[in-house]
Image (cartoon, rainbow, N blue to C red; front, side, top):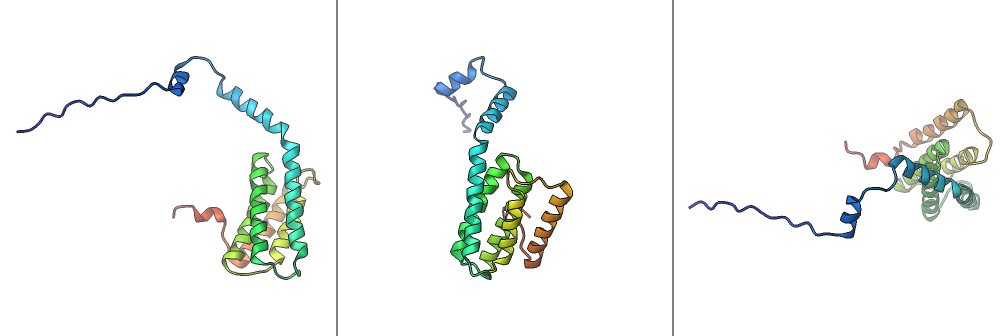
Length: 170
């Protein structure tokens, strides 16, 4: 004998969130985005200061090395500081700085993975990051492209790919 399936009752509990979603009102998406951008602008100078402090720390690590090599622990610190700058640069629209720091992350991680201790590529990236720092002299688009293409040559020389490619499906 075939049993006839009984209809399943689904119960949705009443929660505070479900009640709030049903209510009319609130603000439009455009107003919410505009408000968020205004709020973000109020902390820009603090974040620019944090970017400069992170840059100072990277430069201090590089300066403390013997000029030819960096310890793995120093490179991990540089990677962490660089990642913080990437986050802040992306948040505040510093596109050139974001690209330089992503390249620094790629090089630093590549050196760590390859168990290399070369300081020169990191030093070059540290010099480039200062060119792109908030409040520094503004480079033309051509000058910025030239700096970025020279940094890309470092990745090519070592045969390092971008960290973002690690998570990409093939």
